[in-house]
Image 1: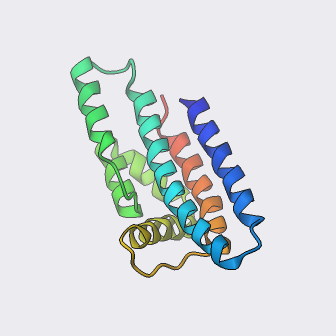
Image 2: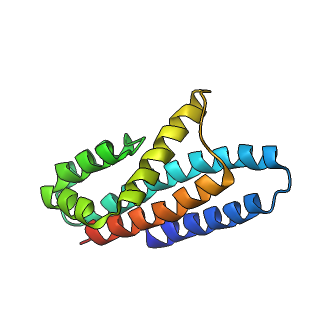
Length: 152
């Protein structure tokens, strides 16, 4: 699990670096939109992997099957959805998350999801390389907190 998450993050780091090097502002903006969608998916993949690792070998097969099925449908992980998800597993997880995460990280998380939805529905978005780069940096903080909370 850890290797898969690390490999995905390395690919995203490389992609962001490639976007930074693009000389054409319009193309860079379009690639930044793509990157926003990618990092939204990355968060979903991280959470799914963490829960999968947490539940593997610790619960009966029917419960594991239920958990795996529930986790598959997780998308658009805004602050509210993420907190609700964590609370369903353990109310302490939600409390730890909210007490550890910074306001800026929460704002970036919500901006990623909001812009991702606007992009995917063809609506106006607020994405530039500068914004998405900061969002990604903050998302790494969110993921670090999740890794600390959702572990055996």
